Length: 219
Image (cartoon, rainbow, N blue to C red; front, side):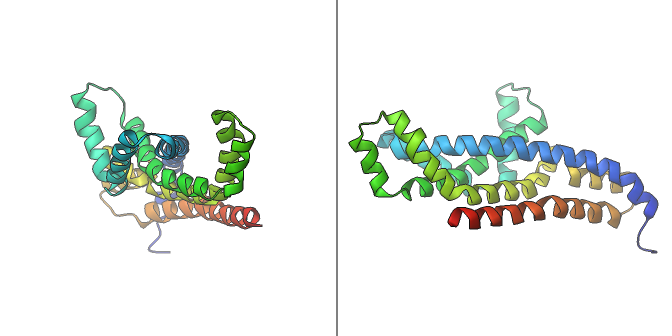
């Protein structure tokens, strides 16, 4: 095929797979941060007094309604040097994506908590369960079960958002393709075709799994 350079594709594949490793690492660590921090945010908003809950809500809304790339630039080029933080670009990117998606997960957790039947709340009160046990043994397991598919969808969305980290020089898969084309002074279709196929191969089965999970939990 005249439009397809097999040698370029062969050269690119191992480079793109290494970039994909960075993409997976950022997705995994960012998702773990988003899932855990989102639960903390939801718990604080649900249980904290108003003078804590309201300012936190404003901060979460600000983060949720501003683009991740602006937050990346601010964190990497303003906060990091101003505070003398020596974190590398990947670490900063993981934290920014994790905090950004934690604000969405907080809303998902909140919906799950509010969806727990009223009778369950009354039951833990009637049994005089300690607050910690009531939350972690009764309320949260039911809430998380209800919202698990939505949380999983956010992981997939974050996976597809990782290329934004190239803005601060993280060598994820899309940046690898850009650097290859720049180095060879040619816009190789192979770079972005292969990258797109790798994304598809990783995200499509995961989306099917999330759909099956949603059906199973809905029964």
